[in-house]
Image (cartoon, rainbow, N blue to C red; front, side):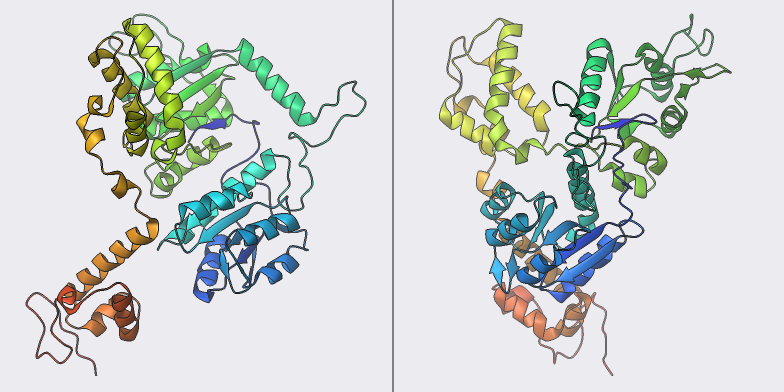
Amino acid sequence: MPAAGRKGGIGVMDGHPDWPQLHILVVEDDPRHAASMRQALMRMEPGVRVTTVDRLQRALDALQDPAIGCVVTDLRLPDAEDARIVRALRAARRDVPIIVAAGTGSEELAVAAMKLGAADYVTKHPRFVEQLPILVRDALGRSVLAGIDPAGGEAAPGVAGGGIDETSPIATTAGMRAVLALVDRAARSAVLVQNCAAISESLLESELFGHLRGAFTGADRDRKGLFEEAGDGTVFLDEVGEAPPSVQAKLLRVLQHEEVKAVGADKVRRVRARIVAATNRPLETEARAGRFRIDLYYRLAVLPLRVPPLRHRAADVPALIDHFLRRFEAREGRETGGFDGDAVRTLQAYPWPGNVRELENEMHRLVLCVAQGQRIRRQHLARRIRDADPAAHDEPLARLLERVEIALIRQRLQEKPTKTAAARSLGITREALYAKMRRLGMTTRDERLPPESAAGPRRGASYERRA
C-alpha cells in the first residue's frame, strides 16, 4: 500500500475524508444482507447516512437526491439483474461511484460490471460486509482525485477538473498546476530508498535519522539520515509494516512536526522530505489489532494505492516476461529464442505466491539454464510451475464456497450430539440444515451421525438435552 505523507500534503485521508454529510445508497432485496451492510457502513464515519432500497426503480428514484455520494448494489433484484443494473445506475448519476456486492463469483459478471463503470466488485462471502467500508473509502477517494465531490457531484476545488482559469492563454486548472509543480519537484529532487525489514532496529534508526560521532560502537563520524539527505525529495520506505515500534514513533514525529532527532543528539533538525511507504501487509487491520501504530497508519494513508497481486493480473504476465527476459539477457550476455505459446499460457495460469519477484527470479533462471538461442518451452519451466493445477486456481468462487460449506457442516455434525445442536451452532434451523445438505448433495454417509432418536451422544461429544 504505497502512501504519501507530509504535513499539509495531498488531502485525501483514507480514514476520514472531509465528507461529513456522506449519504450511501444500498440496493439489496435480502433484508438480512441489507441490515448488515447498513450497520457496517454507518460505523464507517460519524455522520454517515445509509438508505436501503430493494428495487432498481426505487434506487433510481433515490438517486434524484444530490446528497447520495456512493451506491452499493446487488446484481439480482426483483425488477432487474446483472449488467442492466449497473448501466441504469450509471446513466442516472455518472458522478456517483458504484460498488457491486454480488451473490455469485462469476468472473464474466465482474468484468462486465467493471467495464460498465463499477468502481469495485465484491462477492457476498461470509465476512464481506467488513470489506465494504474500505471499498467505499477507496471508491470515494478515487472520485475526489477525478474531480468529483461525492456529496454533491461538483468538481472538487484543488484537483484536476476544478476551477478552470479562463484568463490564461492555455486553459489550466488548479489541479493541473499542482501536477506540474509535482513534476518539476520530482525532476529536481532525489528519491532515497530504505527497506525497513532488511536491517536491525538500531541500524534502521541510524539510516533514517542519522547519528552523531560516538553514539554507538563504530560511529566514528557524524552522519546525516535519509530524511536530511533527501532535502525536498522523497524517502521511499519499503516494507514499512516491518518497522519496529521505536522507529514507528520517530516516523510519526517526522510526519507530524517535520523534524528528526539523530541517534545520540539532543536537538532536533527540520526536514522537508516526503514519505512514500509500501507494505504487503493489510496495514489498517494490523493497526486495529495493535501490531502497528494506528496514528502512524492514518498519517501515512493520505493517498493509498492498492496494487493487486500478480495472480489477479494474468494479462500483465507476457509484458513482464518480455521485460525481465530482455534485462537478464543483457546482464548475462546470453540470448534465448523467446517463449512459445504453451509456456506463456502456463506462466499465466500459475498463481505466483511470490508475486512479481518470483516471476523475475524464474526469468533469470531460464536465461542462465536454457541453451543459447533456444526457444523456451513449457518443459524448461520450474517443476512447481509446470505441476501447478490451473483448474484448481481457476475454480469458480461458487464451487469453492460450496466446498467450504460442506466442510463446515461435516465438522459441526461430528462435534455436536444431534443435528438440531449442529444447526443451532451454525445459526440456522434444523429444517434449513436439511435443505442445505440436500442442496449440497450430502448423503447419510457424509453426516456420520446416528439419527436424532439415538440413545446418547458419541464419545467426545457434549450432549444437549432439550426441555
